[in-house]
Each structure stands twice: as structure tokens, then as C-alpha cells.
Length: 177
Picture: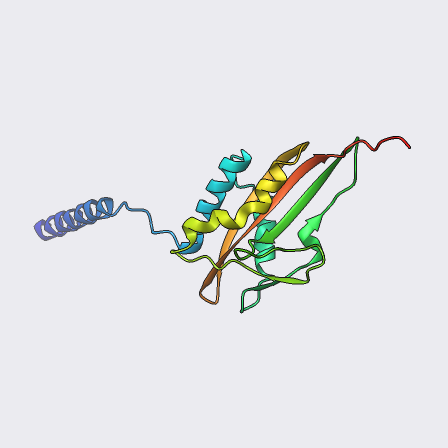
């Protein structure tokens, strides 16, 4: 019986020691570079556009467009990257989703492909330079940003980020002829 009590006491001491050691390691696991990129980009967008949450549906749409990037970082433009919706009561709701273009890259309406912005730790702080199109949308008269989603992904050891945004635009009245 004494041996059983000693074993139980030793077992209890061991469990308590493990519990103490477990409490010491309360650091959160470190975030991947893609997660850091996503948070940084969303933080910038949220300040510029006044959007408070990374909308789950818009984020999924942004993630989908990251699949349009090939191993060389070239985005093939797909029809589902822009949805113009239907006009209702003089307004139209538009959804745009796309990986960020590389700096100094203009994506025209007739383009079939464009180069995506490869994000590195060195250029993450310069990411604002690739976001001009979003600021342009916000500055249009009659535009209301409804939802925003940002996603980042590492493809072949290269990190890219995409956004998806839903906004409503008031259609200007046409002058009578």
C-alpha cells in the first residue's frame, strides 16, 4: 500500500510539473509571411476605404483569383474577376476581384494577362503604390464601398495578395435630348 501511495504521489508531482511547463509556453505561433501580408494589406485598405472587417465571402473570391496566377507570376484575366450586376433604382453594384498588379503595371480593359505584384519582406512597406486603383474607385462621386476581402497566398515560394470588393455606384442621370 505504501508503494502505491508513493507511486501516486510521484505521478501527481509529474503531472503538476508538466502543467507548470505548459503554462510557460503561451506564445502564439508565429504567423506566416502570407498571413502578415494579408493583415498589412487589409489594414491599409480598411483605413483608405473605411471598411472594418475582412468579409469572408469577398476573401474567398480574392483567394479564387490567386489561383489565376501561374508559376511566373502572370495573371490570366477571367470573366469572373468583374461582375457589373444590374442597374436598380439608378444604382449599380459592382464586384471586382483581382491579384494586385506589379508596380507601374496598368491593367487595361482589353488585357488578357498582367504581371502580379510579388510581395517580399523588403517591398511590403511599398505595397501602397500598387493600390492606386482602389483609391480611384473610392474617390468617384456616388460610390459606396459595401464589402472588402483580402487574401494572400504563397505560390512557388512567392507571395501574392488579392482583393475583392463590392461597391455601389450611382449612375449619373443622362441629359435629355
